Image 1 (cartoon, rainbow, N blue to C red):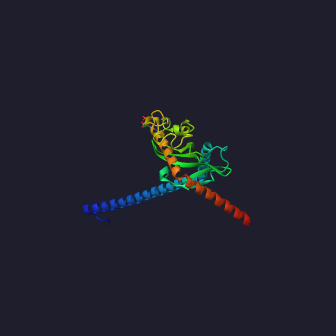
Image 2: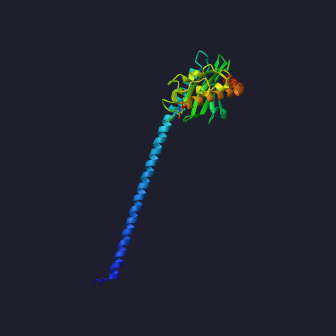
Image 3: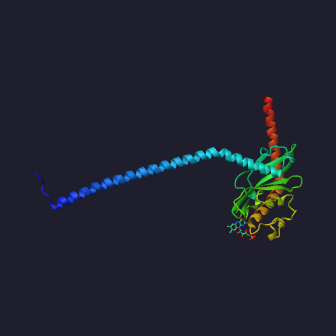
Length: 250
Ligand SMILES: Cc1cc2nc3c(=O)[nH]c(=O)nc-3n(C[C@H](O)[C@H](O)[C@H](O)COP(=O)(O)O)c2cc1C
């Protein structure tokens, strides 16, 4: 015998069905969210793995390229007819606010038959149009003149400020042979500011920043060059002594 349906019973049955459907929908939704979250997590993990592998794989090559670029710049500043040491080995780390450093940088020494010829300073002009301009400047120890300047890294605008790169223009070569006093410190700027260095057409900020920074590096050398040279000579001496001791004990 079937139970007689009443409006109340019908309502209760409808409510039951709705509740079951709701729970089933919630379960499906939860499953779908979990599945998608898992997939997303997996995707992120795979991407991170791929980026890490690529980075590790290219890290050595990047370091090698940077080393080669630095050596090329060093050799342009102090060519092999002026020195015969391995400049990349003959260096000390310096970290100087006055030189615009944001991290320790190597200061190189060029020697000819052991005799110091030039110090090659790493420096950063922080006020380029687009921020930091990293460069090296060689200073001849015989007369404290600039042996050469080479820009290693910058973000200046192509076609406007990038004339500081030697492959774009010879502008940086205008520092060669200059020193503190030749010209006077006031004239270590672009012609527009009463200085001796040409600006670039419509782009004075970049050359102004570099000229000012090179002058500051020369001033830093005037005050600290002798101390750095002493450290470099002591370091080479200690290295030689250690090598001699090792050879003797073998
Ligand atoms: C998009 C853009 C990029 C610029 N890039 C440089 C730059 O790399 N170096 C620079 O000195 N000036 C750059 N300038 C120009 C400077 O705004 C500024 O006008 C100039 O350096 C001042 O030089 P002037 O005194 O010869 O006019 C740039 C301007 C614009 C609009």
